[in-house]
Length: 249
Image (cartoon, rainbow, N blue to C red):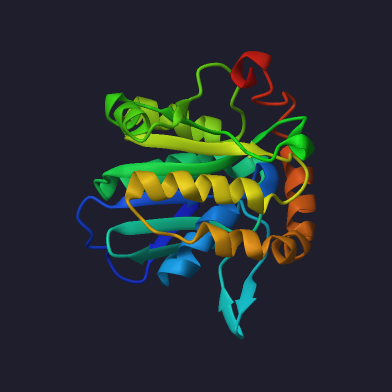
């Protein structure tokens, strides 16, 4: 039940029609890296967190301050939701339901789910393709207007599959934005591609070059998180998603 997930805001977010960006540990940690880059670049404010007994008993420390690993940030008309721990398979349905309910109450302009798309030949790719999926006519128009390729064939699994399906049923304007990525290694290059597309959609000016410049640092720093994420994903991803040849031909 969604009641097992508690979304706690320091104070009510009085933002008119916000854009909500979600980056959770997944393929190549692309969504997390891209969203954290946005949070740091825009100097977004920590405004809330998410807690549940369904999550592992973990806290994180930043500058000596105790924090939840699932955090909510905001600035101007943008809200970002990130997790510094992989979401266990036992919590993904409840978390999706709770997020949908909470975000719908914010009356969002757009919800953007950032993620990686695993490709077997990633090592040989210098220019990474970015793809998007929209849940309604509005999000599909955003994709087309910004000349982002629509993902028309493939399989989506895990939390993002549930979230997209719930968004479709709840008429939430959700857009999944992903770039070709390593499956098992942190991929700042793929995150940079996603950030470039996010810049176009939200009319931002997030510095892609600075993200690429700290790529090696991020790979080392996030190596353990990627390993834990892979172990978690094994229980929810028996199908290797998005590797159907027609999509990448």
